[in-house]
Length: 277
Image (cartoon, rainbow, N blue to C red; front, side, top):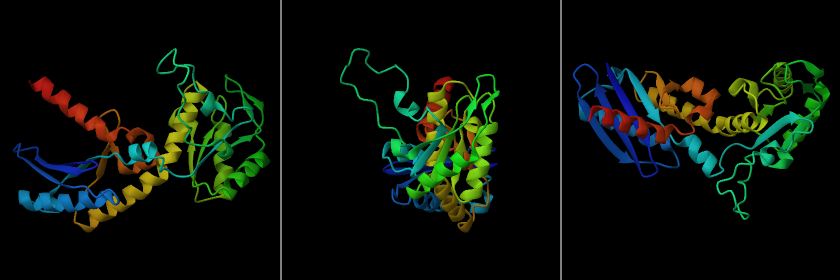
């Protein structure tokens, strides 16, 4: 089995080809192309195969560590994202938790939320912590909320309703309405990506996922198209933040899992080398 590994950095893109049977390893390095990061990867893999005297169709898998999601968040270049939440919970992203980096630093300021307040809209509904419907969702309020977001040109929407971890029915109802009024919209439900208690953690996770989803989808589509055109017809697997891998298709739906994709690979490699030493 022959596998390729690629890590794209800000200056260089590092590539390797590994024959799992013979143990042969061939490495290559090319200049990164920040405006079109997939270009350096595709060209680099083509050069790497020639250097290793292998054809692209001999490669059985391509593993990729990427900072596309990381950079989108750090540079604030993600999609224009809206947040739909329960009435009364519009400011969860700013309230956050009491924890701060320096306990007695009175001048510390919280980072700006990825979704500004004017793109956070409320709907009428209420679910109890037991997952029981306290107030049935008003679908007209969902349509009104979406009308506001549409006027502001949002590309992606995160939905985080109170206690949705206990019962996701209302969030799923919101998704159906959004599909009806805006079929091309990217939608993330908090109950899908982090069905756990604590409103801030669940809401912020859903927002991050929604914020980078369109960016990741465009990147992966371009990358997979380029790989196929270059003769690599194998699955593309992306490094997760936990050091594991996931399919490109799944990474496009839950890109929150690849926010630390690039740094994770180095940690896993260092751990492997330390064990061998």
